[in-house]
Image (cartoon, rainbow, N blue to C red; front, side, top):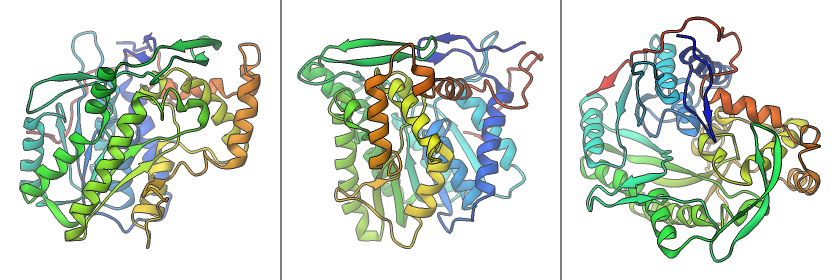
Amino acid sequence: MIIQPKTRGFICTTAHPEGCARQVEKQIEYVKAQKKISGPANVLVIGSSTGYGLASRIVAAVGAGANTVGVFFDKPAEGSRTASAGWYNTAGFEAQISESGVKSFNIVGDAFSNEIKTQTIDLIKSELGQVDLVVYSVASPRRTHPVTGETFTSVIKPIGASYSNKTLNFHTGEVSDVTIGPATEEEVKQTIAVMGGEDWKMWIDALREAGALADGATTVAYSYIGPEVTHAIYREGTIGKAKNDLERTALELNESLSAAGGRAFVSVNKALVTQSSSAIPVVPLYISALYRVMKDKDLHENCIEQMYRLFADRLYAEETAVDDKGLIRVDDWEMREDVQAEVDKRWKEIDSANIEQLADLEGYRSEFFQLFGFRADGVDYEADTDANVPMPNLRP
């Protein structure tokens, strides 16, 4: 079949297997060109098929020579429908590391469920014994609680009052004003239930109770803070409340793991084009401006550069540097005073007429489509392509 991008709002409903594989290959090539990391031996990545989770798995396997278990919720091709990008990404990852000598296993299913936790733990114990790093990188709009059966749905809203600012339709380049009404108390609660730290803690508790977490193990989850212009919709909104809960969970886990020499962190990462960030009003416009400024200053990083720096310069450095709240900050280049001053200056001026000059709109578009395997170098998108790609090392 000829596979072309088909978009619906902030998602693409098709994905290209060769394009996804090429994007994964580029990330692997980057890590191979860096210094080896003296890091973990056996790694569990929960949410391993896209974005920061995928990059974490690549850095662990390629940069540190670690065995990895990836847990993700992606679908294979069916009929005229392509597989999801995460499915193709993982298949591409497997193809690239199959000759490397490291072990790799994949579990597909709902990471929030007890069933997937049990399957994952059984796999770890039978194949690896224990894991010494757990990366929690789950991004989902809803969660069914494994004990109560209640389903929670997250929302992206401010709290307390409506919020108005500029936003961007990155498909058309139109800059417009958007107003978002405030969340209800129930919506805040549900967002925390989906995106907070409860499920992360459930994973760590289950691994420990089963003897599948090594003494001295590290666990890390991912967060974002960002600039003042996005705070009302992000850090001070419903998502921010969930991230606060995630950070409180890290402190709790760190205290409980420390008795066995273990550690728990939240890493605050840079704003990047992801399926999640594309859905948040205001954020695509901010990212477009940020990209232009950081590229002009030769500071731009994508997921793989961020995760290599997290592993090499933070988690597995002689000392793991954290801020006064105990957070790892690999958003430090984004939040540099000179970077933010220039972004803020451009933000005040940006409109539909000048966005191409003041922001990196084309860079944003390209990275969005690359998430789904499109606009990758060296791929013939007019060629007949088999969408049915098997998943190696799929368990159980």
